[in-house]
Length: 260
Image 1 (cartoon, rainbow, N blue to C red):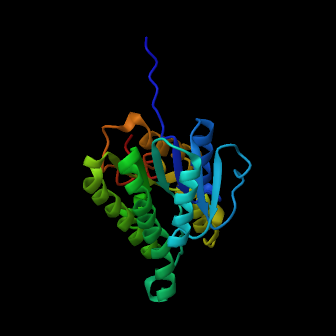
Image 2 (image 1 turned 45 degrees about the vertical axis):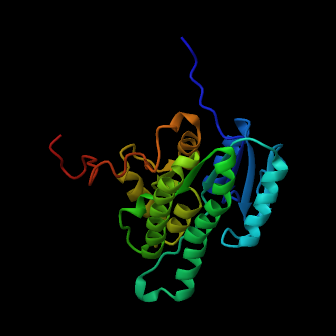
Image 3 (image 1 turned 30 degrees about the vertical axis):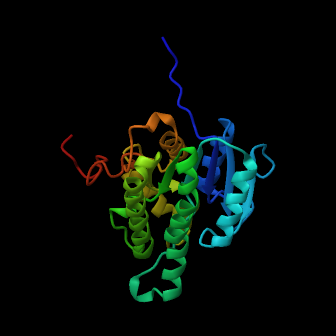
């Protein structure tokens, strides 16, 4: 039987490579032979890997994206990819939210995604490419104490889906990846903000059909699929990578006295 292989872009820009999902995505891409341009405010442990180039700076700065374009040119020719996994999360209630908190979340989560696409899409129209905009299940479902974060992820989702329609005929494929909770930076910070972290983790894990919070690498594999030729038929879609959390309105564990 023939072997099915899914080709990946030759050069992929990944934001948020300093930790968590972005780091896992970049690692998998390097393992698969793609070159990676990582973007983060902090350095990455991948800096010594062959094929990895680091751009240190804010994703909401046009100066950063000018440096990214230089790094792409230095990396050579070939098809391009983009994964916008940089994000920040603040917990709290709306009455306690300041304009500074809102602006910071919008800058990183929304403006950072828009500037990334504004830089890469024109290059992709010449060289071909695929974009994975990382949103969240919170883009469509509310979660308490995360109003600003949820709003920014809803914006990312619609930003990417609209751009997918705008640039499809120019050979650019854009999709959304919406993770659920995973053992990475944002969920860990939410966990640390809980009064009883152990209880918070146990309760959240129990809501998952598999009984555990996903690891970041599991979600990273879904991102690579969307980048790959294997997802060629998928355009403007929102791939939910949440371990089944949102497959139903509630998951019965049996402890509640379910009938089965």
